[in-house]
Every structure is written in C-alpha cells, then in structure tokens.
Image 1: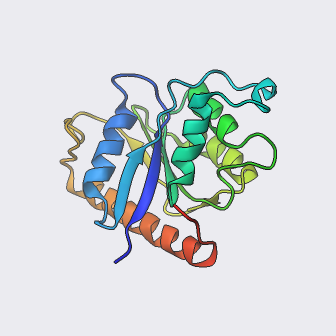
Image 2: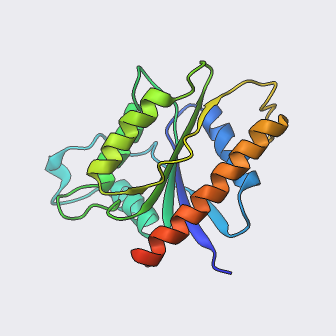
Amino acid sequence: MRTYKVGYFVGSLSSHSINRELSQVLIALAPDDLEFNEIPIGNLPLYSPDYDADYPPEALALKDHIRRSNAVLFVTPEYNRSIPGALKNAIDWASRPWGQNAFDHIPAGVIGASLGQIGTAVAQQSLRAVLSFCNARQMTAPEAYIRFTTEIFPGNGEVVDDSTQEFLSNYLREFRDHVARVLTVLPRQA
C-alpha cells in the first residue's frame, strides 16, 4: 500500500485556532495511507515581487514543504468573508515567481470550521478561486463547512458526535481517493 504525504495548511495564526483543532481531528480520523505534515506559514514576510530574484529562506522552505508533499489540504477559517491574509500571503509566495508555481497540478482539498452557522462556505469559495488560478487539482465534493462547538469538538483532537465523525471520516476517504486519482494521471515526486 502506498503512503501519500499530505502537507496541510492551517489558515489561522491564532494559538487557540479552532481550525488547528480541526486539523488534529482530521489527522486522527485519516486513513492509514495518509501521512500529514503541517506547512508553517506564520514566519513568512509579506510577499512582494521585489523578492522574486532572491527568495528569503522562509519562502524557500515553504516551497520545499510543498514539493515534498504528494497533496495539500487547506484547513482555514473565514475572515471577513474570505481567507485570512496569512494564508493568502503563503499562497502568493508558493505560486511565485512566475513559472515556478508550487501548486501546479497538486491534488488539493479545502475544509474549514467556524463558530457560525455557515461554517467557512464563503472563505472556501474564495480559496477555491485562488487555487484554480494556481492550477491546483481540487477535490470539489464533498464540500465540508464545519460548525465548531465544544460539545462536538471537546479538545485533544477528538470529535464526540457520531454523525460529524462519520462525515469527516468520509471526507478523508474521498480526499485520499481524489489524491490517488490525480497522481495516477499527474504523478509527482515527493
């Protein structure tokens, strides 16, 4: 059985991020053939084309993390009906300079949690538009807009609601199948 290396982004920089908690739940529920490694984004300077001729070490490390991944998973909150600036900044670094887009043809998944009723639906649509431009091969279904409550997610990477656990487990099985299908057609070296 092949193991797929999944680099994951947590869109929030908060030390109390519910999306970081969701990422830990996803890792705990993932099929055995998915191996997760977080791709850190908090230490990146703001992107500017002025850096294109001489990328800083933090941005080179970001691109290397993605290069070593078979797929990427974005676990992101919604800020002002879009994605957080730190996540957009990381995507800008990874997709530049022109012709050196780290997301080109990479299998990608999008999920997120919020305290509100619509989860992260609008942020995910914004992120999907950016990833489309970056030519990432996105899993389009099932969509996963998670309403985060401490009754369902009590902490320590746990989910105690059976229907939520089954939904997230199914999401991860679908993601694994998506990764396998994309890599069959568009192999990557990780």
